[in-house]
Image 1 (spheres, rainbow over the protein chains, first blue to last red):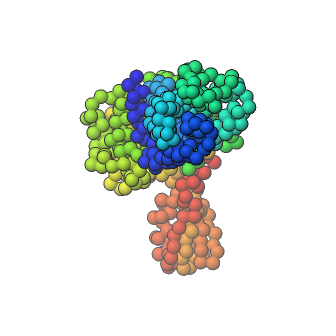
Image 2: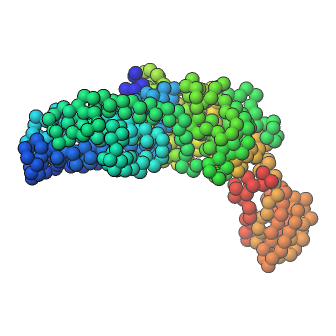
Length: 242
Length: 312
C-alpha cells in the first residue's frame, strides 16, 4: 500500500508540472462560464436552465477535456517522454503503479473539476445541486482518468485515441446506442447527477442513474485499471532511437 | 582478442544473452547475439545505431527480445520482481521528470525499493557531486547534471547489476574523471557494471573487458588491449602532402610498414598495415630524401570505419 502512496505522490509532483496545472484552469474557468450562461438560458426554472447547460457544457466538454489533460499526464506522457522507467524498473507490483497514478489523477480532477462545477451551480443560482454535482463529477473523473491511463498504457498516441473515444465513442455512438452509454463515463456521470437530483431533463432511459450509475462508474474504473495494469507488464519502453 | 565464441562470455555470468535478436518493423537492431556479463566493469562499444541501447533495454527488461533469451541474476527481468530489484539503468535519453529536484527523484527511487534512511539518499547524491544542488529542479539542469542525477537515482537502490548507457554524455572533464572513478569502484566492489559508449578512448579508460557491437552483431570481445590492437593494426590509408613526392613515394615503398603508395601531384596516398610504425618512419624517410612534409592526415580514421573493418 505504501508503494501506491509513493507512486501517487510522485505522479502529483512529476506528472502535473506548473504549466499543466495552469492548463487545468481553463476547463475550471469554462465551468464557471457555463454557470453564468445558465442565467441567459430560458429553460423554465433555474434548476432546469442549469441542467440544460450542464448537459452540454459540464458533462460533455469540461469533464472529459479536463480529465484528458490529467489522465494523459498520469501515464501516457511519461511513456512517450521516456521517464516511466524510473517507476517501471522497480520491484513494486504493476498494479500499484497504476493505482497510485489513478489516485493522484482522480484527486486532482475531483478537486479542480468537481470544485469548479460545484461553483458553477452556485453561480447559476442553484446551490442546492452543488453537492450532488460534485459527487457525480468526481465519480466521472475517476472513470475518465482510469480510461485515459488505460489508453496511455495501450497506445503511444493516447491523446488521439482518447479524443476519439470521447468524440466518436461517447458523443456519437453513445448518443445513439444505450449499450455504449451504459459504459460511458460521460453519460453515466450525467445520469448519476440526474438520479441524485430532480433534473428530469437529463434522465435517459436504459442507462442507470443515481447511485446505480456511480456503481457502474466504479465498475468501468476497475475494468480500465485492470487492463492498464495488465498492459503495463507487457509494455515496450523503447528509446527514442528505436 | 578472441572471436565471438570465447571472450564474449564471462566466467561467472550475471547477465546472459542467448541468441537474442530484436527488430522494429523492418529494422533489425540485434541479430542472434550471444554474450554474457559478469561481476566487474564491462564496456559495450559500438558506433551509433549498432544496437547497444536496444541490448541494454532488453537486458533491463524495458524491451522484450523478438527472439532469444535473456537471464539476469538467474531470472527474467520483465517478469521477475526480484530481478528488477537487483537492476538499475541509467538510460541515454536526457529525459528526467523536470518538476522534481534530484533529491525528490532519488528519494522516490529509494521509497520504491524500500531503502530506509535519509543517509542513503544523501550518499547517492554526494557520490555524483549533486548534494549542493539537490534542492534545484531538474528541468533547469544541464545534460551532464541530469545524467548525474540519473546515476544517483540508480545508485541509491544499491543494484547488483548496473547498466549505464552512454553515462558520460554531457559531463564536463572533471565530472568525467569522477564518474569513471566511481564506475570503476562499483565494478571492483563485485557488481556487474555494463557501460556503453561509442567512444573507444572512453571505454578503454573505463573497462578491462570490452564487447564490440556493429550492426546488431557481435564484432569483437576481449580485453581492452586486444581490442585496441585489433583496431590500430588494421590496413589504413594516410594522405601525405610533401615536396619531392615521387622521391618520397619511392623511398616509402621500401619500408616494411608500407603496403602501397599512390602519387597524385604533390599528394601521396600511403597504404599501411602498421600506422604506428609509419608515424615513426615517415619523418626519417622524408629527411633522407630531402622532402618537406606539409600535411599528414589519415583518410579513414573515423570510428565507423574502424568498426567496419572489424566486421569485415
